[in-house]
Length: 330
Image (cartoon, rainbow, N blue to C red; front, side, top):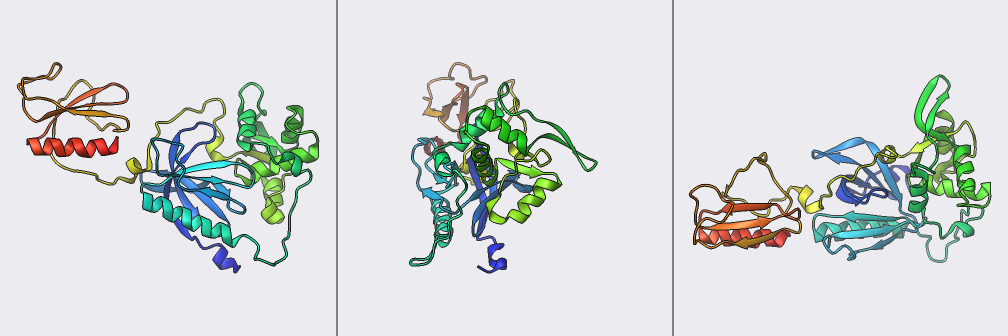
């Protein structure tokens, strides 16, 4: 493949990704390359310049649609060759299927042609490590009590914080009996590096990564420094953020119009419709809890957290239209 073609994005846009350590859903800006799927932080409608992670596409398996999330029908799943699941959500069925089709095509192009010679790059002891779940290894590394120790390291006058040496990772993997030998530990650490769970920092490990090419070989060296990827750094203080669906983050307007909302002591603002209940109210008096002389065309929304909102539409028809539109989003 031509180098320029390899560096040309095939597709890009935002998807919502489920986290590995904290299983919340965050918007990320994805860039599909010929051999990998890169993703970046995406907030306020803007893509961050710092890459948050990558998904290697060689031997990747796509499941579309992935229907195990009852409230998220627009999810598809990528299973990498290292056995790591990535769950991604689009904001429409069309976008979900288009992403899956483009990724499937990219994966197919990475397969050897029929009748061609297959060159296998096998890591030592690869067969023994085939069934190891990398996400669980990462959970263990992140454990506050028994996880790997992060500290500050000096390299050629520069200080790197919250990192660890390559040999410390190998020592920890052997000590925790996740592997039997240092060779197996290097293979496992290389897989974590390939999946973007670990990243090289400092001159030695970064230079080794550049010269290693696609293999991303991990170094069992006390002077080669590594860290968790940027999105995984806050060990011991990771907080679950409120999950948002791709439809909510897409900013697509489902219905617009004029409504009256009863104010209370809370600030004015929006609220999520996920798992809400909405019902029409009769015109035989003001419901309990509604202040003021307001009657007619009322309906009520009860949120997942059991907050009650009373709404008034200008007409009976608009009230029913709003109820129908809201029910489709819950």
